[in-house]
Image 1 (cartoon, helix red, strand yellow):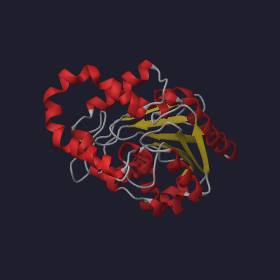
Image 2 (cartoon, one colour):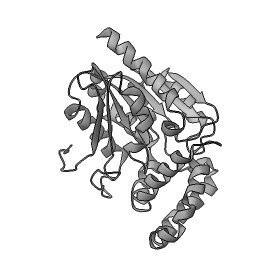
Image 3 (spheres, one colour):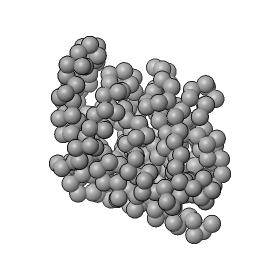
Image 4 (cartoon, helix red, strand yellow):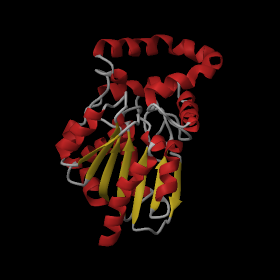
Length: 284
């Protein structure tokens, strides 16, 4: 899909294009639409599903320093709703940074949000940035991690082929619970590695300074579920509880799961989304 600013977004559709409800899946930081594949398979029989790659991610066009912002991603989402899903109600499902984009869209496009959105599922997301608790670590350690990212990014680019065999071990600990499927870790490593270090470095400031607590007033006008793994090291359980508490939504904590719920525990996400889809379909 070609955006107004000339950026091409990779958009993938599944399910019934004439269904009364469309589910839009919004992926996370340094990931792409492929991380939703299990959720897509589970939802396609009951609705239309649209998954896409953010600018600077996957098969979409690159981002620039000026466009690598949550606000720009939110505007992209709004434009996608208007052009790729111009009619009917939508259920938005945002994972991690994707949830941040959904919140920002609600704040920046409140009329569109109120008119078109039937419900929102926030998956492993937060209302404020992660600068203070990078990787769910204390502030001082988080600061050190960010400094290392900036300092060693060029070195990683030069030696990535040599260290690639060890990449999955760190990602497994960082992003998953204790017993992930090997193929899920491999897919995530493949996707993250494709975005490292360029996209990771480009979008990191936006993630760090993100603050959308004000957007919760608008977001809370629609039914909301915030789902999180109890072993999430990036967006801790408290984030989901805080988000749900402010908007009057439901917080769902998934045991023995980490940050990659779309791959680790798709059934829980599918069940949450299906409730919104079925409820809206009955109304229609």
